[in-house]
Image 1 (spheres, rainbow, N blue to C red):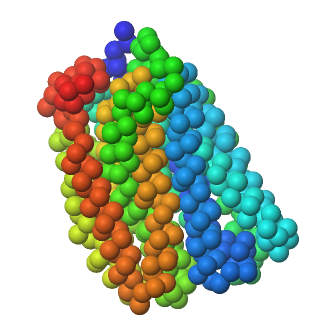
Image 2: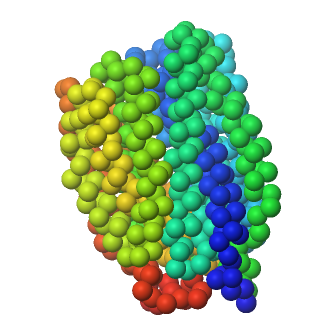
Length: 441
């Protein structure tokens, strides 16, 4: 039997770096759409709508990607549990990259009419399908190679990927917004970040070409015939709890990085450049602190950090919205920073926590489905609901704060009902034995 502890640091660094690069590229593809939806897609693809209705429609196409992600996790989870984690990384990257490049080629409503938003919807669905498989494959390949005592640290590398992808997406958008006129940006500038996705996908495929299959997968003698059936039959409660627990993280992230862009630029008159700069600065902090929080998870356990992060989120949502409503860059940054610190306290350890909750034979499906269902609850609905609530309120959208606080309390309840996995004090020479010792499986 393969001893996971024999995977040395140089090998782990290569595996974790390739996983980070892949998730960064795939989340670049996903985030660049969210930024475009907040800034330009409404008028270009839904010009007959009012400004608010156009933004809602653009966020509707944004949300489709989240509804596709659980389907992608089922499809790619089946491949990952039956045929290995590595094939998932290649196929999902190809699908997401190709569909993202295609978004940049779709003519606007003025050119082809209603076919334009329909094509946008289809391509966004394909983006979500690919991303639904990416997270499970990248996280499991890293987590199942990692030494048990440092699994949180190594598994946090793929979790840094979304921050890098977001910074790439918004950095390109910011550069174009700052150097082009508004007419140039609306005419063709917004398409450039989508075309860049093609080159990034080629880079990602090259980085992943040398990865080896997960040793934990190779040890499984009896692979699940239909992993989804086993997950629904034996782990349905765990899936629902993980989805509910993770929903607050998605809600916070997309409230800060997507809804706030539209709200501040349209309702408060804040410039695109200022908003993108504020959000990007906060995401830099998120990426930098992720490994540190993951190390704390290795030391003290995953669940305690998740409970702390949820509690902080519930307390901070009203101050965050009040600070955003000022329109002052420093105050908005402060509000976003508090929210993102609560977010990263939870999500830095999720890449180690979720795989530890599921048995290896259905781990790729179970962990990915739970993770992506949380995205539907928190990520798909938040920009839409927040935009509608803000439109009904005054200058300070307290309804948005109440909505986000409610999601935080829901997630806090779900985390409280989940078991903890192995803290560092439990000796282990093989990852899943440590999990069994603390979860009772």
